[in-house]
Length: 258
Ligand code: 13P
Image 1: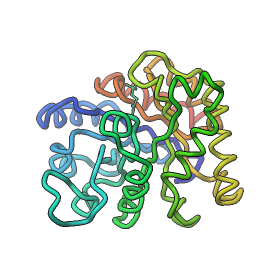
Image 2: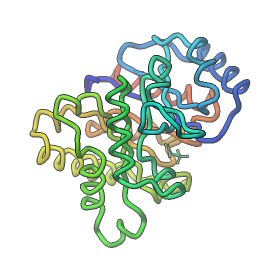
Image 3: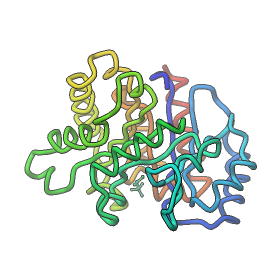
């Protein structure tokens, strides 16, 4: 994605059922206009993806899977693969803090999922972020480096063009304790610095970086004004269609100002 665009993603986590998801999309469709410089992505429950894929106009919204298994087919009871999601979603979250901490997913799982997404034409959104104690110990940059190496181990510089990096500090997710813009600037610079070391300066400067963690309709504009990041990954504030539409509107305004 070109860096003069903004990417706004709503991660509903385990909220809203199929019917509610459909009503939400009706409401949101009335409230947001299509804009070629703002991409709006919804990550509903996996149950709603099929319905929404028929309902949404992909020029207005894209869809993301919150999770998927890294194998393409086989005897994996209860799992859904990136191959099965192909054609339904354009993006897939990988390595979200809740997957790492609640479901104990490792860097090995994360890297396999990044590969599965790329293999199936789905853009992986690799989520990385330090814990509160890593932050206190001054280890934020090291933690980000480890998670980048862990998730991107087999990714080529060509493939990196399809990877989105989401900086989501663990301490800021769902806590109301959002990272201030200066924290986000420092983290985004650290991420580009690490990527430069791994892939060279062109790849590092063109990769899309998002911020996520307790973003609200009120704080969104402060982040969207930062040239270091390219959009937002929103949890709680995306559950209300009007609040989310308000954030999308702020993204329009931020690209218009440029
Ligand atoms: P909150 O916006 O609820 O803090 O969640 C952020 C997040 O985890 C998005 O993936």
